[in-house]
Amino acid sequence: MSTKITRINQIAIEKPQEVFTSIYHLINYELLKECFDELDGNKATGLDKVTKDMYLMNLDENLNILVDKLKTKSYRPSPARKVSIPRANGKLRELAIANFEDKIVQLAVKKLVEAIFEPKFTNNMLGFRPNKSCHECLKYLNVCIEKRYTNYIIDADIKGYFDNINHELIMKVLEMHIKDSNLLRLIKRFLKVGIMEKGKYITSKYGTPQGSILSPVLANIVMYYGIILYVEEIKKISRGYIEIINYADDMILCFQHKDEAEKTYKLLKKRLKDLGLEFAAGKTRLIEFGRYASENCKKKGKNKPDTFDFLGFTHYCSKSSDGKRFHVKRKTSKKKFKQKVREFKAWIKENRNKPLKEIMATVKKKLIGHFNYYGITDNIDMIAKYHYIVMVLLIKWLNRRSQKKSYRNKGFTIMINFFDLPKPKIKVNIYSITIDFS
Image (cartoon, rainbow, N blue to C red; front, side):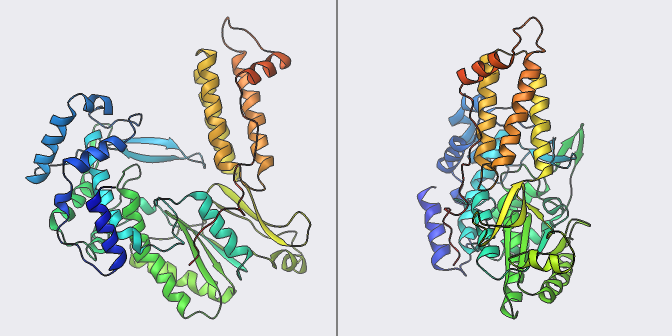
């Protein structure tokens, strides 16, 4: 982060009510060059197909022209290219891929906006923030359930959150601490730039498209002022424990008392309606969950407490290994597991005829990535199951290569040992993660 942006961040920390009126000029050559250096050159390209390497060929000239456009207010972002990727439920997630030059400017704007608003966010917001992670979010939730007074959970899902945030609402919350008309105008241009889909230009007064560098911080700002602070006000007048854990558009609410959970749910439905949003039908529910849930289920003649999914894991009530203490445990959710298997199957089928060394290098990366995320406390069985299926699919499709060597079990084992494919292993101890709960 540049020195001047660091200074803005420091002011925002020391003076929470500060309003910034002149920061647009900080989007200069130095900041844009810093953003260029940070961008990943292997990401998908926008409509103009310009890559980072192509932009690098005339970097100084390109950046100087860009700076002039920004100074004269003549810069106009181009429409994004729409792409669709599979979701865990089998449907498609739509992403907006901007041109590389627009990504540079978006990142510069993000740095400015983030420097101002990041210090205001609370510690229960852990999505798309500097030095935060999904595993920290799971740790936060774990403490709320195991160490606090959680007896009920609201598993909340906002319908199309990123797609339905009103642009006027975004600008309204930004204007609480930014009064620089030039910067606000630039952000508004990014919001209204639209996308190209099959040659058709589409724009809307709603949404901050997923895939945009700027979208996560804008979505977090709306979440903070629209939802998080609202729940904080509810907490002040509650008689029991209430907490919200938020990761981007996903959130879990913990409650001590059922009546307060039901009341909060009704209040949040109304709050979302006022914001032009709504809970997803059938996906938001109130369940009994916590240290007394299993005992209460038995009294009601129910086998076991309900579970809930969050960040790709199914959470369920259980006991410690010695059976003496209540524990929340988690395993890879069925939807995510099926998605990951489906993705690997499609990949190996398509790439089976590539050189073996190249195939195995990619398989190794995929396994490492899977174990690094899903290799969390209590989830050894599910990552072992994933590893087994990957091995089955691997030998199946390698043996279908035309005029290539076939593998039997012994030969296959020798081969995977030669390429040093990782074995299932717990990588993250949920109880050793440190996090600020203040």
